[in-house]
Image 1: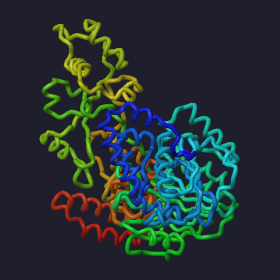
Image 2: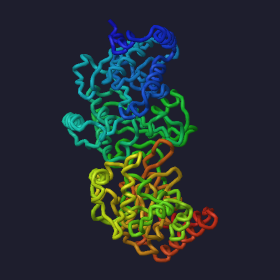
Image 3: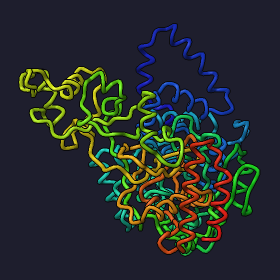
Image 4: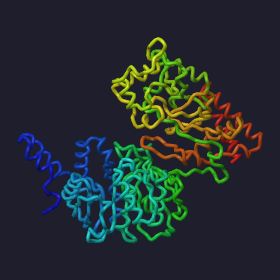
Length: 602
């Protein structure tokens, strides 16, 4: 009568299997019967059998056992029933005694899984581990606490990470409306699925009950996370938030996210306690992590950093990710960068190999320069702090993609990509012709794209006035890359070259040339970079993301309010920085003088 062994589709598959194949498969059963970690074995089997792209589309990523132990020990304080929504292979709720057959943990686990296969995996693993469990195939977000018919004492959860845009429209609208009604707050329609699990979980807990969630840290920095942060402040004592630093060991082998574990205790609000923001840079065992969560002292550790912040001081609109590595620069008297500039992300081409061209490709296709714009293709191609005409010419000679296909409206060419393909395939005579009866070179280049093996990016291309022209932006006055590993370089653009979506561009600069260079000196200084670091969003693989909102709100010096000699000196130092970068690249001495001056200014 154990529901873990209800009939399943795999039973029918086994009935059809060849006898020799079935015998070989059954021989592996002993690996599960005698393994000390059945959840790990089953989780690995599932990961091997299920292609990564499918697990990523479903937001399914296996919890490392070291983290699972810490999460369960936090949530399981002598509770009778532990809830595991999104149970998967049961890693979070499995017994954690190294010899599970000797385990005496009395906790009963209620495992919730929408996927019948995942429910079977979890129930089998927990049963093999001697863990009492009741598995359910159910969408957790539509589960009412009364349906469990007993009180839940704690929650451990590694919810699916599916983005809001990837959810079916009707389903997303329904769960969003349900959560807004149950919580009484406005929830962003862009919220990913994991945030709804966190909202809904609160209805299963009484005051004093604990919960631990393993999620991406994106909600700490994005706009949709503001409502979730407000909810956590209102409904929980936030004991600790643990960020597993992307520059250290990756928590997930195949998920490009920075892992965050939230250790929460249900409360009625008004919490006066301290929240520990814990950054884990290196491998750490579960006992050390547990001690850091509950008793960790402020400051550097052998494996990371702990920052104490009174929960009453936390603000929902604040970038909480910055609190894992707090900035010691006083920014209270600084001005937001958005006061001086307009910031835009670069436009997407739809296909860089088609729209971004080398000089050889231009010569081969015969496209006239009147149909092209100069281009700064990638951040790595800019070596210093400014970009000049001579730099563009060097890239041109080196065979880099320095041209952007940018024609005005081409009469006789269909504006829609779909219509153009029909025109080429079924009505080629309607294409425009030169006086000699030949199709113009630029149209011929467009025509060739119809026969490409890899189609162009349809969504981007169809949503602009002419499919064959990327949306236009003027040449930016200065630029910065959208993501980086080793800081962010703000580049003065001395050309008419434009950028695409791997840069942020700055326009409508309300500063004169000297003031602008003074601002760029600050942005590229060590002090400026430290302030910027507090505004970035960590990505897996060691990358940091710098959003438009973060740039607009970035604290900077106000050159218009500084004394003229200081502004001139800062501008001179920026010029020296540019020249030194060109000559030998050793800018340390210039940066030291720049920082010394900025410390006096700030």
